[in-house]
Length: 634
Image: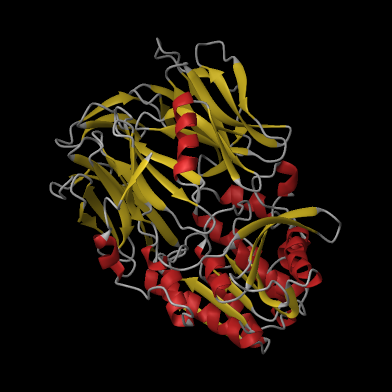
């Protein structure tokens, strides 16, 4: 396939945050912090039905967000919508027609007891005019699009209140089409085929994490039970309804691992296993277009793999691997209505990625814009899948990132556990380990027991109830680096975000001599406080079950062992964090100071758990770099 020069040079993206330092042989810490801390160009991208325009959401000045529409025929881009305060963030935009869009934004506010989130949906023209609120503006969550009704041009199906409504995005006329409370799924052609009702207790006030699902046959409005009883959402979850085969595709846990099954919605409920993997969970159903047509599935062993069920996309993926040999991770993001034009994103472990437009009629592949122009010209580090031994001999998967151009012997090193705890890292570009590698550190990302994606046994209950195993696996990663000679045993630090921050603090408490510096971003520090924070939310019962009761609640809380930490600590937390309340870092800071420990606390106003602000991210990386240089060198 032929390649063209950039179709869109992302001038608007560059203007949003200003220019960063270009390629240099030896960038300073400040230059690296800005380059790697600058947010990616887009977090949501969609293609117009005729394939001539894209809409994308990206960062603006500070923590604001903007929506841009780009005309691909002339290579121009203009902002059409922006947030005006730190609380609101545009999340996504999509085309209803070539000239009409829907955008979703969310935000948060603080009341007397907690930080509370909300979401809203607006419609607007592709030039930014005629902005209209679509959802319920008085409810916490204003509703959402469940079917884009491709080919309609003006209407969408939305959840509003206790049902589904057909809403005209220009006139705002709404027609109730279904009384379907709870989770709703259509077939992509305007027909509501599935509903899910969350199990609740205490007069409906609290959810349990379990759901009961009902479905309809194509020729009936009668609801029938898909599953007779409530089932845990971690063991079964609907993914898509395929109109062509009249089947539901769903994740289902079989022998401890997630598989993908198809279930006939014709009244027979005949079930067929579509995909399974003996090593990891099958965790992705690949769809394309506004109709969400199913074209494949994916899973991640050492690296992510996609199996295409659609012959056309299987052949296209093979062709793309030849056209983009250094960008093996390819995602089909959107398609024109006729699927002759496809928007895709291609990346690798060493390349943050590029958006491309593929035109099957012209047989051309054109770059639209790069995801991280601030890193152009820089050499990135290779990410290597490895395994190492835990204390009990278990093989722990991990990713090892080594600084480019350095001999991997006696390096300063960073252990970087992921958040979650039921999440996982993957082989891909990640700005934080790449920043650390650029500063000369070996970085290991352990997939400790408690990580998601490796089956139910590996979850080990979770990283809170089973914290001793999880933290033991994390600390074993540091010992692996030292025992192999990759790292200098006297120059190892630990850095983590969210549960990773918890693991950093708890790891430093359980083995005080192992680390020379600790960085905890938005960490859980008190398991009892985590339970108390949940009392304001409907998932309180789920959180209480996740944390449990017993000695581990006290013993597994870093705030109670602050006196055992020997290394300097950097705490980072934002005061509108809904995931982990800022009180956790407030208490940890006080405990460390009371114990006479060295601690710096970077407390951020107005942001949430993600710290989605380029200048704040740059400051965060600068502070991490300064602490590491002072304690373990670089």
